Length: 510
Image 1 (cartoon, rainbow, N blue to C red):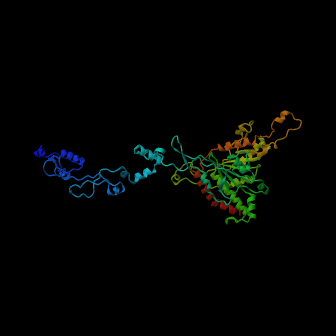
Image 2 (tube, one colour):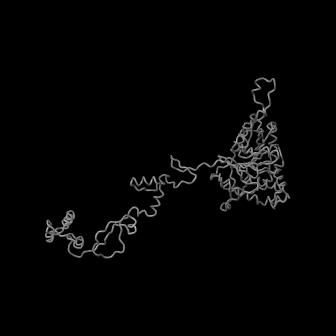
Image 3 (cartoon, one colour):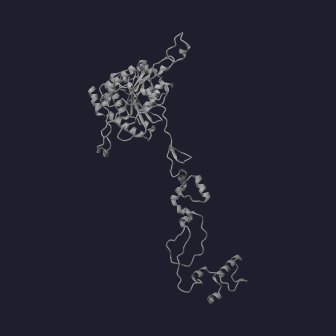
């Protein structure tokens, strides 16, 4: 220690005396009781003349300020009065800040993240004094992000599940009475490929709407006024009118699309055109030509967009109906070609045309139609008429497999076509059964009357199971979802209305 260290108190001792002086009431430095060796502490002198440092060149250090910028200081609480300024030093343009508060470090992005969290979760995090490692909504949804509209959260697994599609209660228009396409059906369709499309064709009054309602969503014992496809009322039957106009659409919860159509070659539609003096499109000159072309357009459309087409007739048989089917097959639009990338390949499927399954439904069949001999003749006639058709009219539906005729072997029908018989719907009522003769014993009064065929309820159930179990081939060269089918069908309908083959056929009719 130098001599100056013995004659003058050290730095520590001077600071201690300075603090003691402040505690005693800031008395005068020359008052009694003061140590004669006491020298007031000058912080600037200590900075300039450190006692413990050797005498020599003193290096000036850059000051470090641990404070907020002036902009942030103005927003926060008022800062205390700063200490006396140090000795003049080289000017510094910008202070060096080594630390930032947590609020400053977050910035605008951090503020957005906090605001996007639920209030309860933010309060919980602030209470615990912890900083979340990821947004709270991600913890709740387990990394799934925001939940899509129309979805529900499963409390067990924490995953979003899509709501079931809305159940249809009645049919809607796919094509209106002016033969214009309607877009309302797209709301009921999903993005899935397991779909079956069933259409119907038939003359007026054969029961098309009733059959489609029973195959889709209704039961025979229900009131016909509640059917999804409206049937003919008694008033319409009396004046010989038709109930369905255009094409009606209905889809079940099993994802089966049913298309009910207006009657083909309908006399009531022709009568309406003539009596109401409706203006025909410019390409048609005569009303009956326009009615026939409407029927061909609908049939050609169904042959292109349906997996199964049911042809309903109420008596056997009308040869003009089969000629109409063959004409519709002839003018059917071709299947759209595959993409250009695959068109150059020499695959076996290239250039193939699509044809649906066709089912001949004999509605309102009588007791003699269920006779095995008559049934065999009916199969033979249909096979002879349709032998040159590309429609799949045989091999996919069988009445013998339904156990309707338990005594007949499978080989009884050599050429079994897709033919199904349905009796009158009210044939099961008590009024339709034969009454017991007077004098008959109690045994015969308890037995049901002989009808010659199973009940209507059992037959319609067997028909439904057979149609729903049919194969579902691809309608085009690509697999279609329900929504893709809708857009595909809209394109086909537009092509049918502008078909050159149909236009040439209408000129031949004129």
